[in-house]
Each structure stands twice: as C-alpha cells, then as structure tokens.
Amino acid sequence: MNEQLKYDLEHLKTLLEAVKHQGLDYLNHLNDRPTSKKDSELEFSELREAGIGGLEALNLFNKKFENLIVGAPGPRYLGYVIGGTTPASIMGDWLATVYDQNPQTINAQGDISMLIEKETIRLLLNLFRLPDTFLGGFVTGATMSNFTCLGVARQWVGKEKGLDFAKNGLSGDIKILSAVPHSSSLKTLSMLGMGSTNFEKVKVETGNRESICMEDLLLKMEQLNGQPFILISSAGTVNTADYDDFKAISKLRKKHNFWWHIDGAFGAFAACSPKYQHLVKGWEHADSITIDCHKWLNVPYDSAVFLIKEHHNVLQMETFQNSNAPYLGNPKEDFNYLNFLPENSRRLRALPAWFSLTAYGKNGYRDIVENSVTLAKRLGEAIDKSEVFELLAPVRLNNVCFTLNGKEKNEVVGFLKRLNQAGKVYMTPTMYNNRHAIRASFVNWRTTSEDVEIIIDELQKALTND
Ligand SMILES: *Cc1c(COP(=O)(O)O)cnc(C)c1O
Image: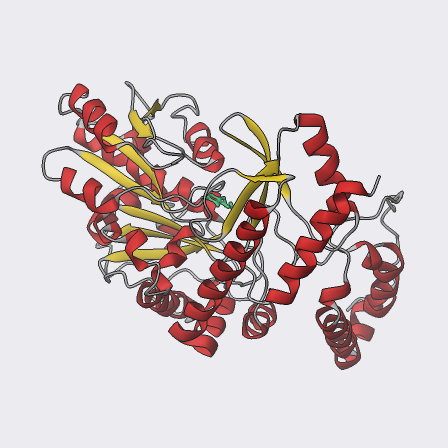
C-alpha cells in the first residue's frame, strides 16, 4: 500500500474529526458567511508527484479556498432556487459517501441500496399526496429529471406512430406544446434530439399570468388533429411561481392523445401544505413529473427525482435499456435502475432525502413550505409599498419578482451588483414581461422574519451605496 494512503488509513479518525469540526464551524456561522464571492486571484496548482496526505490537503484547501466559499446554504441566499441542507440530510449525505453504494438491482445480490431508493420514492409520494401508480428514481437535478421524463415521452410519441426511436433514431417531427417551459426543458429537448426551438408556444392566461391559456391550448390541440404530442406544463414557473390548471388539463386527456409532463421542480412542494395544495389539484393524472430535492426538500446538491406512471415502464426500459439484448424481461421482476434512467452507476442519492423525510415528516415540510411563503409575501409587501421598487407580479408562492420603478437595464444591473456585493443577501437577475428584473426565491428552512428585515434593509442600502 502507498505510504501516504497507509498513514491516512491509520489516522482516519483524526481526518474525519477535522472535517466534522470544520463542517460544524461553517454551519454554526452560516448567518455571517458572505453571500457573494470576494474578488481574488486564484492560482491553479499542478499535481504533485508525492501527495501531502489528507490533513495537509485540508490545510492547503483552507489556505486557498475556504474563506472564499460563500454561504449558499444560508438563510439569505435567494438567487436561482437554492435550497439549504437540513441537519438530517447532512447525516444521510455523509453516510451515503461512507457507504459508497451503487443502487441498481436487488437481483444481483450485490447490495440493498436500491430498496432504500424505492422506499424513499414511496416517502416522497406520501409527502406529495401522489398515488403509488408512479415509478420514481433519483437523478442529479431537475434538468436530468426533465431529460428522463421527456426521453420516455419521446419514445411514447414514436410508439403511437408505430416507430421505435430508441432503437432506430428519430424520424418525422415530434409535436410539443408548452407555454412557459423552464430553460432546462428546452435544453433537454436539444439533448434528446427533438430540438430546443421545436415546440409550439401556447399563449398564457391574461392578467399578469404565466399559466397556460386553456382556450389557446384547446385550439392548438384541435389543430393537431389527433396526432400524438407532448405537453410540457408547469407547477411553479421560476419568475412568478405560477401553475397551469391541472384539473382542466386532465379533463382534456379523454379526447386528446398526449403525453402530459409537469415540471414541478420546486412548485411541487405546494402539495405539502393544506393552504397551497389546491395549486396542484389534478396533477396526479400526469404521465410524468419532475421534482428537485436540492431546492425545497433542503437536501444537499445534487438531487432530484423523476416520477413516471408505472404503466409506461416498457417505454421507459426501451429508452434507457443498458443491455444489448433486445429482450426486456419482466420490468417488475427484473427491475434494475440502470435500465430506467440515464446513468448506470450512481451514488446512493436517496439517503439524504430518506434521512430528512424520516426526521421531519409531513409536518416538518409543511412548516418549511409555509414559512417560505410567509416570508416571500412579507418581502413582496415591503417592495409593493415602496416608491422606488416595483413588484412585477403578485407573490403567488415563494418567489418575489421585482424591479426598480421606472429604471432602465443599467440601473437595475448596477443596483443588483451593489446589493450582492455587500454580501448579506444574494439575488439573481431575470427578464419578466420584457423588463429587466430581480428575483428572490425563498426555499431555505433556515430563513426567518429577522432575515427578511435584514433583506429589506439591504435593499435600501443598495440604493445609495455607490
Ligand atoms: C431549477 C429548475 C429546473 C432545473 O433544475 P436543476 O436542478 O438546476 O437541474 C427545472 N425546472 C424548474 C421549474 C426549476 O425551477
């Protein structure tokens, strides 16, 4: 055995204690960590002939990088849709690394980690009040979940036309309808060879909405004249957290032949609260649903699930089949995750989610969701009342979309830069109704009303701090 490895093996306790100590220090001081990076020159190192061992590597990491790490899992990091990490999720995540399993199948007799993944999917279906007619699995993020779901949707379209795209490649055009698809859905259309611009844009409802206009959807569906198509709908748009009318869409299923996909990366969590459940009413009739776990579930990166109706499992196996043998076997008996999703080898990504779901239960997630929404609405009110800011859409759930009243692009960009540079709060830019805007997304379990007061204060300061 290599000397350095041997030494570290003998000192494993010291190494892991050092990491535990450092991790605790970071987490205990998260509120004070800057939320934006410092300007600093980083010089890349070359790989050494002889390593320096774990402890010295930690020292070097601390010297080079540690004080540049931002407080992304902290309470005022509101850019994109960035979740935090619950205590139990960190426990699960550390153990997932320690156990280092590769969840695939139970039949190979190699390990049982696939059962942990299956149970975690069941817990998530409970959390979202969804039926067990969905089959699910873990992938790295909502982008890969959309990829998985739309990959099966693509195979379904082929089947409806008597074609097998997975085996023979794409042919003919694939009809896709969507109103406000997330950029990642378009990326997956490109990755899946369907083309990111090859979708037909459905109008949105009038009245400052981002939800599908049902009248226009019906019109476009009728124009397709019975051709199979894919509908990409939204449970929570990124700018204004708007929802399509799932009850109305589910009624169309009887008459129209389509694969119904819902991107609920963060918006799915409305299902956790009796106050917001109505937003996803009817979504259980969808063919596939995307849900991120590293957002509102507050587990560490990277983690998301796909949920696809189990009766599509042959299509799903055809799409992701790893074996060269054309024989698909019985999907129930020969179940192996590597035939059901893009990756072959994966980490035990379910474990952090299992720990967090088990530790905090339905009530824990109801509280997290309701707290985020209350705080987003509080910030929305403050912005709406102010003369200098303009709220661009009502705060429907957890996202606040606003801009500077009557100001142009440069001033909005400059303001956001000053706001972020101060390091107490982090927000990201967006475009909404052709306006340069700013988004704040609340999904972190740590955020409190004191944080919102700090944020309101910081917004004021950034107006003048040149
Ligand atoms: C964040 C997000 C995605 C992409 O998620 P990743 O986890 O970054 O891959 C997709 N759809 C919606 C609605 C999102 O909010």
